[in-house]
Image 1: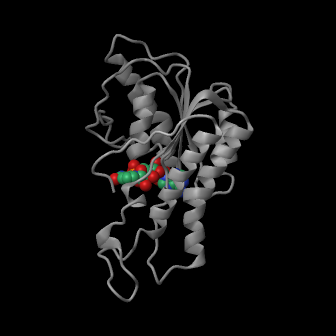
Image 2: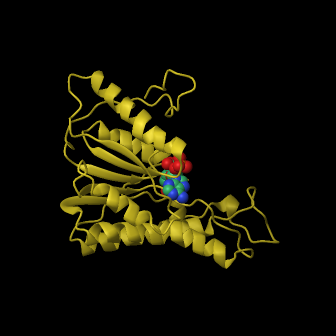
Image 3: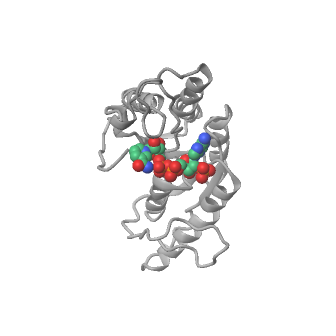
Length: 238
Ligand SMILES: NC(=O)c1ccc[n+]([C@@H]2O[C@H](COP(=O)([O-])OP(=O)(O)OC[C@H]3O[C@@H](n4cnc5c(N)ncnc54)[C@H](OP(=O)(O)O)[C@@H]3O)[C@@H](O)[C@H]2O)c1
């Protein structure tokens, strides 16, 4: 993807290329938490060039601009390089919805009730997460609760809210971005306070636990909704 040409405008990560694929997601809607950067943004771009509308969440105005404006124009540009028109129903919208706010799930669901999204979700991608973890021997209740809220409670409540409002469709997908750390602690970061401190001074204890919970939730959602669980592994993840 090309970076924005104006120096003071917000830009997406440069150097990403958009190879246009089949237009097989026209009319579908994807909700992507954490769509302004990294994996969430890459997913948003990939789905949008296949025709999928995007409701992407973030935490601040600058990131909102990246989704609603910069990503939107990058997608338009990517269609210009092909023989195809950007589908008229394709909508890209950013939404400030912090994982740590208790109203996060309702905010997302309310936005989906807007006419252009029409109260439906074809794809939900839980990408945003709390990377904070804590050090064994130094944990406190607030830190644990914070991690549980961002990495477990809010993803659960988002799915719950969308299910309650019957926004999921027969072939909808729930995607949870996990990490190898759910199974394999980062050896250089496994330390115990007052014994061996890791280089970063933190342990991925709660991060790993949250990712394990997310994988477990996916299995249960798959069974509950009558679908199937698929695991896709990537290399070089952290
Ligand atoms: N990067 C890796 O190597 C890697 C490897 C394995 C797994 N993962 C997992 O992949 C997912 C994405 O990682 P990434 O590295 O692509 O992330 P990233 O580049 O750090 O992007 C984080 C995204 O999440 C949003 N976000 C951050 N805190 C949030 C909050 N409290 N509420 C709502 N949105 C929030 C950010 O929005 P703002 O722009 O507003 O901050 C941004 O859009 C995470 O779950 C991570 O654990 C990453």
